[in-house]
Length: 159
View 1 (spheres, rainbow, N blue to C red):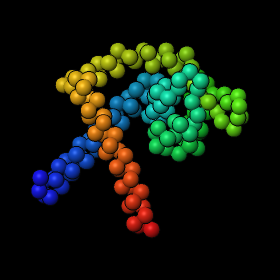
View 2 (view 1 turned 45 degrees about the horizontal axis):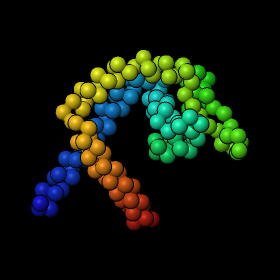
View 3 (view 1 turned 180 degrees about the horizontal axis):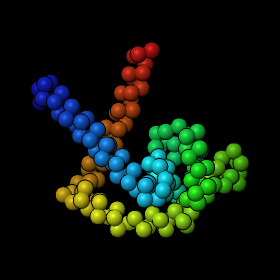
């Protein structure tokens, strides 16, 4: 591929990612509105659900998953706790850490959305089989890792 074609392919990829990100934000915003919470709070709930293996999950893990500041997670999870969507408890062996879990209310409300979520996933991914999505995820994981490295290198060059 020539440099010009490669540049065009990279630009097309970047703009496709921007478009996908924008559409996913709208989808997350819609889910959040159905629960009466904000989009960042919805993402926090989804991250807790994804990361919790039955013992609760620490705020730092949620912050790392979402690539956001831990203080923001702490602030938002306190609000989610007040709304009855999260339970927060101190870790038994180290009280500095708070472990979070979805409440039964959160699980019930999320379950109510499951049919809509399945329909949405079907619409978005109906042309792909499991193997294709797995391959795509491998490629995207590599690009994400390389993007993190590139961002670090850029910050070093600017300094």
